Amino acid sequence: MASHNNNGLPEVAEEGFKDAASYDAHRPSYPPEAVEKFLKHLKVADQYDAKIVEIASGTGKFTEVLSQRPETFAIKAIEPHNGMREKLAQKNLPGVEVADGKADKMPVEDEWGDACIAAQAFHWFATPEALKEIERVLRPGAVLGGIWNVEDYNKPQSWQATTKWEQKLNDFILSLEDGLPRFRHQKWKEVFDQQLPATPFQALKDTFNDRLPRFTLPLGEESTKWTVWLSEEALAARLNTLSQIALLKGDEREAWVKVFKEAIRGDDVERNENGEILVHGVTYFFWTDRL
Image (cartoon, rainbow, N blue to C red):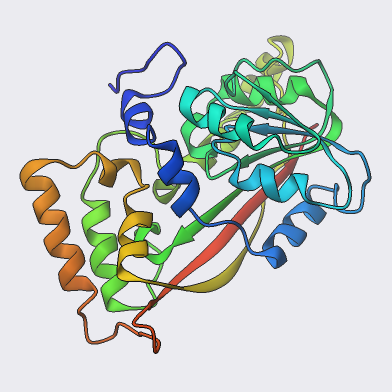
């Protein structure tokens, strides 16, 4: 079982994300088209002064997008990682209140939020306890949504990579299993399915034990494809923001560097006139209404 620190984060995540400045510099923002669709599904696009709870805000990659919107959202940005939270607070984003907390224990009033968002993070805390807390902070009919930027090199195994070189990197990353949940495992969806009783008797029992479904099913799901040109150095830096890559040392680090160098010399690597590499990915998002 993975060890956790006092803030509830797995030690691997705490250590892997300790370089908050590098994470903030090299992780991508979100495509405007995807953001617009996502916020419409959350019923807050064009809703001025809507109240948004953002869980695991990190350094604020998605918080910045929200704070720059014309709706002037009121945002409570919750982040347990000290370094990331400090980096977010330093940005002094308009309409954003930054707070220490985690998905199953948020310093937010009952039924405060019109929407709850987890960007690049829901897989870390997809538990019944977190769903119960998210339900508490949302008003009835509000929407919970999760959004991820997913590069081909970090995709679920069942997804098709656009190129052989990105699949080569994906194969290596998939081999780095440490027992912790990642988006690519797709197990985060199970917490929603667990809301459903297996038998009529269980449904009756759940009714008396306050275990009724908290969010609607099936989940709404959508994705938007994108590409970006990155130098070899920028691509290596972005890959190193993955906690499992960041923690590689010694022989494991050497093996990773070898795979990376071989991959970007592949015959299907597309480069522009500046020598930058074309990287493929999708922005995936889901949404579900609070009952």
